[in-house]
Length: 358
Image (cartoon, rainbow, N blue to C red; front, side, top):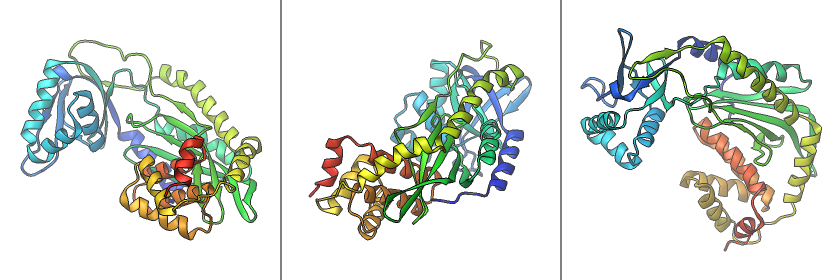
Protein backbone atom coordinates (compact mmCIF):
# COMPACT_ATOMS: atom_id res chain seq x y z
CA UNK A 1 0.00 0.00 0.00
CA UNK A 2 1.29 3.45 -0.89
CA UNK A 3 2.10 5.54 2.16
CA UNK A 4 0.95 8.95 0.95
CA UNK A 5 1.68 11.74 3.43
CA UNK A 6 1.71 11.83 7.22
CA UNK A 7 -1.50 12.58 9.08
CA UNK A 8 0.03 15.83 10.38
CA UNK A 9 0.94 16.94 6.87
CA UNK A 10 -2.54 16.01 5.67
CA UNK A 11 -4.19 18.06 8.43
CA UNK A 12 -2.03 21.08 7.62
CA UNK A 13 -2.84 20.85 3.91
CA UNK A 14 -6.58 20.52 4.52
CA UNK A 15 -6.49 23.57 6.81
CA UNK A 16 -4.55 25.52 4.19
CA UNK A 17 -6.94 24.57 1.39
CA UNK A 18 -9.97 25.46 3.52
CA UNK A 19 -8.71 29.05 3.79
CA UNK A 20 -7.85 29.63 0.11
CA UNK A 21 -10.41 27.71 -1.96
CA UNK A 22 -13.28 29.66 -3.48
CA UNK A 23 -16.52 28.73 -5.27
CA UNK A 24 -18.24 30.89 -7.90
CA UNK A 25 -21.60 30.59 -9.60
CA UNK A 26 -20.94 31.82 -13.14
CA UNK A 27 -22.87 32.26 -16.37
CA UNK A 28 -21.14 30.96 -19.48
CA UNK A 29 -22.86 33.79 -21.40
CA UNK A 30 -20.43 36.26 -19.84
CA UNK A 31 -17.45 34.01 -19.11
CA UNK A 32 -14.50 33.93 -21.49
CA UNK A 33 -11.83 31.30 -22.10
CA UNK A 34 -8.49 33.07 -22.55
CA UNK A 35 -5.81 31.19 -24.54
CA UNK A 36 -2.26 30.87 -23.20
CA UNK A 37 -0.01 33.90 -23.26
CA UNK A 38 3.35 33.60 -24.97
CA UNK A 39 5.18 33.56 -21.64
CA UNK A 40 2.81 30.93 -20.12
CA UNK A 41 2.39 28.15 -22.70
CA UNK A 42 -0.46 25.77 -21.92
CA UNK A 43 -2.04 28.07 -19.30
CA UNK A 44 -5.63 28.58 -20.43
CA UNK A 45 -7.75 30.77 -18.15
CA UNK A 46 -11.42 31.48 -17.46
CA UNK A 47 -12.14 35.20 -17.14
CA UNK A 48 -15.25 36.58 -15.43
CA UNK A 49 -16.29 39.42 -13.14
CA UNK A 50 -17.55 39.19 -9.57
CA UNK A 51 -18.93 42.64 -8.94
CA UNK A 52 -16.15 44.87 -10.19
CA UNK A 53 -13.38 42.35 -9.49
CA UNK A 54 -11.96 40.40 -12.43
CA UNK A 55 -11.16 36.74 -11.81
CA UNK A 56 -8.95 34.80 -14.19
CA UNK A 57 -7.99 31.39 -12.74
CA UNK A 58 -5.84 28.93 -14.69
CA UNK A 59 -7.80 25.95 -16.05
CA UNK A 60 -6.44 22.75 -14.47
CA UNK A 61 -6.48 19.27 -16.03
CA UNK A 62 -9.74 17.98 -14.54
CA UNK A 63 -11.47 21.27 -15.31
CA UNK A 64 -10.38 20.87 -18.95
CA UNK A 65 -11.93 17.38 -18.96
CA UNK A 66 -15.18 18.71 -17.52
CA UNK A 67 -15.30 21.62 -19.98
CA UNK A 68 -14.89 19.25 -22.91
CA UNK A 69 -17.55 16.88 -21.59
CA UNK A 70 -20.00 19.72 -20.88
CA UNK A 71 -19.57 21.17 -24.38
CA UNK A 72 -19.63 17.70 -26.04
CA UNK A 73 -16.20 18.21 -27.60
CA UNK A 74 -14.62 14.76 -28.11
CA UNK A 75 -11.64 14.41 -25.77
CA UNK A 76 -9.04 13.47 -28.45
CA UNK A 77 -10.02 16.55 -30.47
CA UNK A 78 -10.11 18.76 -27.36
CA UNK A 79 -6.63 17.58 -26.32
CA UNK A 80 -5.27 18.08 -29.84
CA UNK A 81 -6.54 21.67 -29.97
CA UNK A 82 -5.20 22.28 -26.45
CA UNK A 83 -1.64 21.40 -27.45
CA UNK A 84 -1.53 22.32 -31.15
CA UNK A 85 -4.12 25.05 -31.78
CA UNK A 86 -4.88 26.79 -28.46
CA UNK A 87 -6.54 29.78 -30.14
CA UNK A 88 -8.97 27.42 -31.89
CA UNK A 89 -9.81 25.70 -28.60
CA UNK A 90 -10.54 29.03 -26.92
CA UNK A 91 -12.73 30.04 -29.88
CA UNK A 92 -14.61 26.72 -29.66
CA UNK A 93 -15.24 27.07 -25.93
CA UNK A 94 -16.36 30.68 -26.18
CA UNK A 95 -18.64 30.00 -29.16
CA UNK A 96 -20.43 27.18 -27.32
CA UNK A 97 -20.57 29.26 -24.13
CA UNK A 98 -22.51 31.92 -26.05
CA UNK A 99 -24.61 29.48 -28.10
CA UNK A 100 -25.78 27.44 -25.08
CA UNK A 101 -25.45 29.73 -22.04
CA UNK A 102 -25.80 28.00 -18.69
CA UNK A 103 -25.03 28.63 -15.06
CA UNK A 104 -22.15 26.55 -13.69
CA UNK A 105 -20.39 26.12 -10.39
CA UNK A 106 -16.68 26.90 -10.74
CA UNK A 107 -14.46 25.66 -7.90
CA UNK A 108 -11.04 27.28 -7.53
CA UNK A 109 -7.95 26.68 -5.40
CA UNK A 110 -4.69 28.67 -5.40
CA UNK A 111 -5.92 30.66 -8.43
CA UNK A 112 -6.55 27.45 -10.34
CA UNK A 113 -9.91 26.54 -11.89
CA UNK A 114 -10.08 22.99 -10.59
CA UNK A 115 -13.70 22.02 -11.37
CA UNK A 116 -16.46 23.10 -13.78
CA UNK A 117 -19.68 21.63 -12.40
CA UNK A 118 -23.45 21.70 -12.51
CA UNK A 119 -25.20 24.31 -10.37
CA UNK A 120 -26.84 21.34 -8.66
CA UNK A 121 -23.48 20.02 -7.45
CA UNK A 122 -23.41 19.64 -3.67
CA UNK A 123 -19.89 20.13 -2.32
CA UNK A 124 -18.92 17.76 0.47
CA UNK A 125 -15.61 19.21 1.53
CA UNK A 126 -12.54 17.28 2.65
CA UNK A 127 -12.11 19.37 5.80
CA UNK A 128 -15.65 18.55 6.98
CA UNK A 129 -15.19 14.85 6.22
CA UNK A 130 -11.92 14.73 8.16
CA UNK A 131 -13.55 16.48 11.13
CA UNK A 132 -16.30 13.85 11.10
CA UNK A 133 -14.23 10.66 10.78
CA UNK A 134 -10.88 11.33 12.44
CA UNK A 135 -12.39 11.42 15.97
CA UNK A 136 -14.16 8.11 15.28
CA UNK A 137 -10.90 6.49 14.18
CA UNK A 138 -9.02 7.96 17.14
CA UNK A 139 -11.53 6.73 19.73
CA UNK A 140 -11.76 3.15 18.40
CA UNK A 141 -9.31 0.86 20.26
CA UNK A 142 -6.69 -0.76 18.05
CA UNK A 143 -7.30 1.46 15.03
CA UNK A 144 -4.38 3.01 13.13
CA UNK A 145 -4.41 5.24 10.07
CA UNK A 146 -1.93 3.47 7.79
CA UNK A 147 -2.15 5.69 4.71
CA UNK A 148 -3.64 9.05 3.75
CA UNK A 149 -3.32 11.52 0.92
CA UNK A 150 -5.00 14.47 -0.75
CA UNK A 151 -4.56 14.77 -4.52
CA UNK A 152 -5.97 17.21 -7.05
CA UNK A 153 -8.93 14.87 -7.42
CA UNK A 154 -9.60 13.18 -4.07
CA UNK A 155 -8.97 12.83 -0.35
CA UNK A 156 -8.08 9.36 0.98
CA UNK A 157 -8.01 7.97 4.51
CA UNK A 158 -7.18 4.29 5.07
CA UNK A 159 -7.27 2.78 8.57
CA UNK A 160 -6.87 -0.69 10.07
CA UNK A 161 -8.22 -2.25 13.26
CA UNK A 162 -5.36 -4.37 14.59
CA UNK A 163 -7.73 -6.05 17.06
CA UNK A 164 -9.91 -7.61 14.36
CA UNK A 165 -8.03 -10.21 12.34
CA UNK A 166 -8.14 -13.70 10.90
CA UNK A 167 -6.34 -16.11 8.55
CA UNK A 168 -7.24 -16.44 4.90
CA UNK A 169 -4.88 -19.42 4.76
CA UNK A 170 -2.52 -20.87 7.34
CA UNK A 171 -0.17 -18.04 8.37
CA UNK A 172 -1.74 -15.55 5.96
CA UNK A 173 -3.20 -13.02 8.39
CA UNK A 174 -5.47 -10.16 7.38
CA UNK A 175 -7.03 -7.38 9.44
CA UNK A 176 -10.22 -5.33 9.18
CA UNK A 177 -9.96 -1.83 7.84
CA UNK A 178 -11.80 1.01 6.15
CA UNK A 179 -11.03 3.09 3.06
CA UNK A 180 -12.59 6.54 2.88
CA UNK A 181 -12.47 8.60 -0.31
CA UNK A 182 -14.04 11.89 -1.33
CA UNK A 183 -13.86 14.26 -4.28
CA UNK A 184 -14.53 17.99 -4.02
CA UNK A 185 -14.29 18.40 -7.78
CA UNK A 186 -16.86 16.03 -9.24
CA UNK A 187 -14.50 13.10 -9.79
CA UNK A 188 -16.52 10.49 -7.94
CA UNK A 189 -18.82 10.06 -4.98
CA UNK A 190 -18.03 10.04 -1.29
CA UNK A 191 -17.17 6.40 -0.59
CA UNK A 192 -16.89 4.43 2.66
CA UNK A 193 -15.51 0.96 1.87
CA UNK A 194 -14.28 -1.95 3.98
CA UNK A 195 -10.57 -2.61 3.58
CA UNK A 196 -8.82 -5.95 4.08
CA UNK A 197 -5.20 -5.44 5.12
CA UNK A 198 -2.78 -8.30 4.49
CA UNK A 199 0.06 -8.34 7.01
CA UNK A 200 2.55 -10.47 5.07
CA UNK A 201 3.05 -7.81 2.40
CA UNK A 202 1.11 -4.84 3.82
CA UNK A 203 -1.28 -4.73 0.87
CA UNK A 204 -4.81 -3.43 1.10
CA UNK A 205 -7.82 -4.81 -0.78
CA UNK A 206 -10.91 -2.60 -0.96
CA UNK A 207 -14.08 -4.69 -0.77
CA UNK A 208 -16.29 -3.97 -3.75
CA UNK A 209 -19.52 -5.48 -2.43
CA UNK A 210 -19.93 -3.50 0.80
CA UNK A 211 -19.65 0.10 -0.33
CA UNK A 212 -21.50 3.23 0.77
CA UNK A 213 -21.57 5.81 -2.03
CA UNK A 214 -23.05 9.27 -1.67
CA UNK A 215 -23.38 11.39 -4.80
CA UNK A 216 -22.72 15.14 -4.65
CA UNK A 217 -26.16 16.29 -5.79
CA UNK A 218 -28.63 18.72 -4.31
CA UNK A 219 -31.02 21.53 -5.16
CA UNK A 220 -30.10 24.15 -7.72
CA UNK A 221 -28.07 27.06 -6.35
CA UNK A 222 -30.01 30.32 -6.09
CA UNK A 223 -29.88 33.33 -8.39
CA UNK A 224 -30.45 33.86 -12.08
CA UNK A 225 -29.36 35.80 -15.15
CA UNK A 226 -25.81 36.57 -16.18
CA UNK A 227 -24.52 37.77 -12.81
CA UNK A 228 -21.52 35.99 -11.26
CA UNK A 229 -21.06 35.73 -7.51
CA UNK A 230 -19.04 33.88 -4.93
CA UNK A 231 -20.79 30.98 -3.22
CA UNK A 232 -20.26 31.22 0.52
CA UNK A 233 -20.74 28.50 3.09
CA UNK A 234 -23.62 29.20 5.44
CA UNK A 235 -25.02 27.71 8.65
CA UNK A 236 -28.02 26.27 6.83
CA UNK A 237 -25.74 24.16 4.66
CA UNK A 238 -23.74 23.06 7.70
CA UNK A 239 -26.94 22.00 9.49
CA UNK A 240 -28.17 20.01 6.50
CA UNK A 241 -24.89 18.08 6.33
CA UNK A 242 -24.84 17.00 9.98
CA UNK A 243 -27.12 14.04 9.39
CA UNK A 244 -24.90 12.90 6.51
CA UNK A 245 -21.73 13.09 8.59
CA UNK A 246 -23.42 11.11 11.39
CA UNK A 247 -24.29 8.41 8.85
CA UNK A 248 -20.69 8.42 7.61
CA UNK A 249 -19.44 7.98 11.19
CA UNK A 250 -21.73 4.96 11.69
CA UNK A 251 -20.50 3.37 8.46
CA UNK A 252 -16.86 3.88 9.42
CA UNK A 253 -17.49 2.16 12.76
CA UNK A 254 -19.32 -0.71 11.05
CA UNK A 255 -16.48 -1.31 8.57
CA UNK A 256 -14.08 -1.92 11.45
CA UNK A 257 -16.23 -4.48 13.30
CA UNK A 258 -15.81 -8.24 13.64
CA UNK A 259 -19.22 -8.97 12.10
CA UNK A 260 -18.55 -7.49 8.66
CA UNK A 261 -14.94 -8.67 8.67
CA UNK A 262 -15.96 -12.28 9.36
CA UNK A 263 -18.35 -12.20 6.44
CA UNK A 264 -15.59 -11.01 4.11
CA UNK A 265 -13.04 -13.43 5.59
CA UNK A 266 -15.22 -16.42 4.73
CA UNK A 267 -15.41 -15.25 1.11
CA UNK A 268 -11.64 -14.73 0.95
CA UNK A 269 -10.95 -18.19 2.34
CA UNK A 270 -13.00 -19.68 -0.50
CA UNK A 271 -10.82 -17.91 -3.09
CA UNK A 272 -7.76 -19.85 -1.95
CA UNK A 273 -9.48 -22.98 -3.28
CA UNK A 274 -10.19 -21.49 -6.72
CA UNK A 275 -7.09 -22.22 -8.83
CA UNK A 276 -5.89 -20.64 -12.05
CA UNK A 277 -5.65 -23.79 -14.18
CA UNK A 278 -4.78 -22.14 -17.48
CA UNK A 279 -1.75 -20.15 -18.56
CA UNK A 280 -0.92 -17.45 -15.94
CA UNK A 281 0.18 -15.04 -18.67
CA UNK A 282 -3.13 -15.47 -20.48
CA UNK A 283 -5.02 -15.09 -17.18
CA UNK A 284 -3.32 -11.75 -16.58
CA UNK A 285 -4.03 -10.67 -20.16
CA UNK A 286 -7.75 -11.26 -19.62
CA UNK A 287 -7.57 -9.43 -16.28
CA UNK A 288 -5.71 -6.52 -17.87
CA UNK A 289 -8.34 -6.24 -20.58
CA UNK A 290 -11.21 -6.26 -18.07
CA UNK A 291 -9.71 -3.59 -15.81
CA UNK A 292 -7.94 -1.63 -18.56
CA UNK A 293 -4.50 -2.02 -17.06
CA UNK A 294 -1.54 -0.34 -18.70
CA UNK A 295 1.22 -2.46 -20.17
CA UNK A 296 3.47 -1.64 -17.21
CA UNK A 297 0.73 -2.63 -14.76
CA UNK A 298 0.07 -5.86 -16.65
CA UNK A 299 3.73 -6.85 -16.39
CA UNK A 300 3.78 -6.02 -12.69
CA UNK A 301 0.65 -8.09 -12.00
CA UNK A 302 2.14 -11.05 -13.87
CA UNK A 303 5.39 -10.81 -11.95
CA UNK A 304 3.67 -10.66 -8.56
CA UNK A 305 1.26 -13.47 -9.48
CA UNK A 306 3.98 -15.87 -10.62
CA UNK A 307 6.32 -15.11 -7.71
CA UNK A 308 3.63 -14.88 -5.03
CA UNK A 309 3.37 -18.63 -4.54
CA UNK A 310 -0.38 -19.00 -5.18
CA UNK A 311 -1.90 -19.40 -8.65
CA UNK A 312 -5.42 -18.87 -7.32
CA UNK A 313 -8.07 -16.18 -7.26
CA UNK A 314 -6.59 -15.02 -3.95
CA UNK A 315 -3.17 -14.92 -5.59
CA UNK A 316 -4.51 -12.69 -8.40
CA UNK A 317 -6.13 -10.38 -5.85
CA UNK A 318 -2.80 -9.93 -4.11
CA UNK A 319 -0.94 -9.45 -7.40
CA UNK A 320 -3.24 -6.53 -8.20
CA UNK A 321 -3.01 -4.93 -4.77
CA UNK A 322 0.77 -5.41 -4.70
CA UNK A 323 1.00 -3.67 -8.08
CA UNK A 324 -0.67 -0.67 -6.44
CA UNK A 325 2.61 -0.01 -4.63
CA UNK A 326 4.46 0.18 -7.95
CA UNK A 327 2.44 2.97 -9.59
CA UNK A 328 3.27 6.62 -9.10
CA UNK A 329 -0.25 8.00 -8.73
CA UNK A 330 -2.01 7.57 -5.39
CA UNK A 331 -5.35 7.82 -7.24
CA UNK A 332 -4.38 4.96 -9.53
CA UNK A 333 -2.99 2.90 -6.64
CA UNK A 334 -6.36 3.07 -4.92
CA UNK A 335 -8.11 2.00 -8.12
CA UNK A 336 -5.89 -1.08 -8.26
CA UNK A 337 -6.73 -1.89 -4.63
CA UNK A 338 -10.40 -1.64 -5.60
CA UNK A 339 -9.83 -3.93 -8.60
CA UNK A 340 -8.51 -6.52 -6.16
CA UNK A 341 -11.84 -6.44 -4.38
CA UNK A 342 -13.72 -6.64 -7.68
CA UNK A 343 -11.88 -9.86 -8.59
CA UNK A 344 -13.43 -11.42 -5.49
CA UNK A 345 -16.92 -10.46 -6.66
CA UNK A 346 -16.58 -11.47 -10.34
CA UNK A 347 -19.49 -13.54 -11.67
CA UNK A 348 -18.64 -17.20 -12.18
CA UNK A 349 -18.46 -16.90 -15.96
CA UNK A 350 -16.01 -14.00 -15.79
CA UNK A 351 -13.80 -15.74 -13.26
CA UNK A 352 -13.70 -18.96 -15.28
CA UNK A 353 -12.65 -16.97 -18.34
CA UNK A 354 -9.63 -15.77 -16.35
CA UNK A 355 -8.92 -19.08 -14.59
CA UNK A 356 -8.99 -21.19 -17.76
CA UNK A 357 -7.38 -18.72 -20.15
CA UNK A 358 -4.89 -20.36 -22.50
